[in-house]
Length: 233
Image 1 (cartoon, helix red, strand yellow):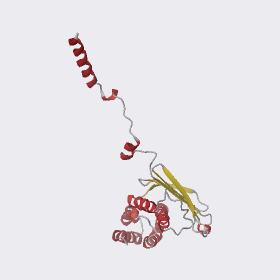
Image 2: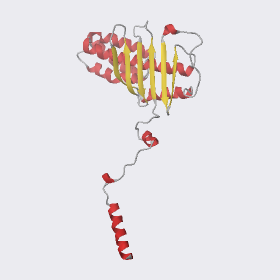
Image 3: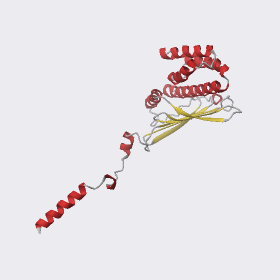
Image 4: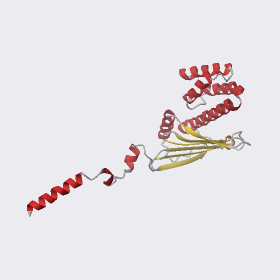
């Protein structure tokens, strides 16, 4: 009898070891594992910036993206249609934003950031930041908090660069002779540090430099801008 039991036990072990992978029970990933593997989780990091001023030629400007810099850029010019484009914010800019938010202890702070004086004629900014299952929204038109001021400056830089990129693409496709004017505006924005990530323009400037369908002055200007960006000026 004992011999029969041992034989049955041995057969059971063999059967268990040979169960195919597809028949084995699935193991659900934990929340921490999803985060480590880059999967989505409730604690993902997210940025949302909205600027509104009905008196401006561009009354609505908005960016929305995740910790990987992937998202959308939306704007609307007066008497124009709403434009929504894909957005890719560089890791260096995302890291700058996170550093400023950490320095300001944004999620745990109760500071309103709005200056004691009302500057609503400058437009209203609504900013929301989410991370680790927490989120906070602030609404202001001017601040003297150094970290938040620099944060909003970076968002304005993202909007400036994406607007210039849109205009460059549109002009090249529909009015190539106006490309030199666009490049002059871009140079002014680069020199004034109004662009969050100058490297964003390297691919398009390389294309313009080699595009024989564009005026020679534009191709030469693109080359100069590439050198400027390379030197970090």
